[in-house]
Figure (cartoon, rainbow, N blue to C red):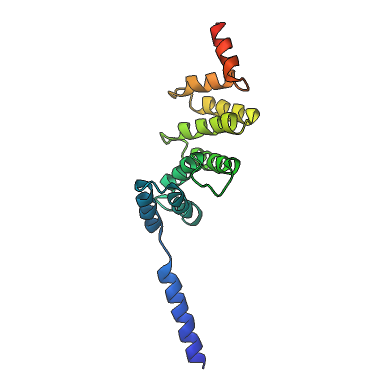
Amino acid sequence: MKKIVVIFALLAIFVIGCSQKSDKDYLETAKTELAAKEYAAALINFQKIVDEFPESEHYKFALLQTGELNHGLVNKEISKEVAFEKAIKAYTEYQKKYTDDPKAPQALFLVGFIQANELGNIEAAKVAYTKFLKLYPESEMAESAHSEIDNLGLAPDEILLKNMAK
């Protein structure tokens, strides 16, 4: 009887081990889904890489994709606010982990943009834009960050009137 139990236990371990997908499997599936414009499904697979394979060579790409796809509101099962918070989390982590990466400035800028323009969190936006300007003063987006800070909390018509008065 003990032999049968041991055999079934080994068989179960083998089946579970063989059915587990690798980071590369998730990446290939996610890229295929992106190409097919199945964005919500791609997000799930990129998120699997982020959650299950933080040491993967594909982590960096997957992390940025989770930010972009959440920012794009592709998951219709969660609220806009939750999706934006997930995008902010991904962009923030990306910028912190890959500070010198060419896409890091954009990630941090988008944190400020989402805070200001999507969530209406003016103070958090100011913090993000200020950090952006401190870390990336030579970025091509620096002028936009200055402009965003100058216009935080203003309605579009107020910004127009302010600019016309200059």
